[in-house]
Length: 386
Image 1 (tube, rainbow, N blue to C red):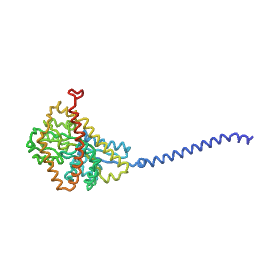
Image 2 (cartoon, one colour):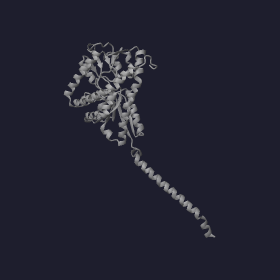
Image 3 (tube, helix red, strand yellow):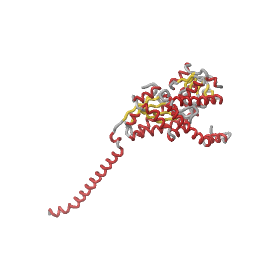
Image 4 (cartoon, rainbow, N blue to C red):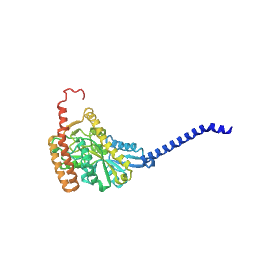
């Protein structure tokens, strides 16, 4: 009787054993998969987090310039899954606007956002990496920096300062600036105190004016109180936000002095090298994304702002006379030659810059330049869209 009962339960026992084996096998497979996933994600599993501080030369969240810094930090946080968090501080919150370079170089903060031409006193060649008078536009600058050796030269210039630069924004061509007097000849610039940085400031000095380098957040008051007689900032979108139409009458173009201004992200090199490779890549490509995004933003907003300045606020929009532009171009060439004679690195960067500009201009003469002309000449007399 007991023998018969033992044989009756044998199939059930076998099935149970099979089920147990299957469960154990599945658990083993899942364990191996989890180990592989952990190895693939690496630092994310370790949970190591990095906290950086960014200082900027712009007012906190200022349209275009300040918001690009915020966007860069947001992209880094999102792409890293929160492993690298960057806290953004506007000008004056931790260091003054013009203290960004030194703060990042010394390592007191990890990263900064501004314009390379602000640091001409530290490295004259730095000016090429923002913009120079009658130089390259945004499209050409991106080509030189990313595919023409410009970025490598930029990093060579900043190497002594323990800084790693990245292009991180471009305003496109700017406006020539705000004046309270008409500019009809070069003589009209004589005696004027104008906020105009970089090599353009030196050109303005040679033209008889006095260049002043004032942070953007102080420009309105400086114009209002007569500390300066004229100012250039960026373009309509920013100029409307700052309210320059309330303190100046004439708005001049084209932006001979800043035809395509690249903004910079400067990272303390030691801080960058302390990051794992995947976070280094995230910082690199987040900077490149913000570089394009700023240009897109200005392209989308400048015309509406310009129309508001002219139609709603009565600003007089003027084109600089050809005579003035020709003289400014002549002076610019003299400044380049003299700077190159005084500084070997300036000469090295200028050689690369002007060579690339010449090649890009030759192509654009038959492409972009010709297309703009054809588009204008063939436009209908009564277009359906303004």
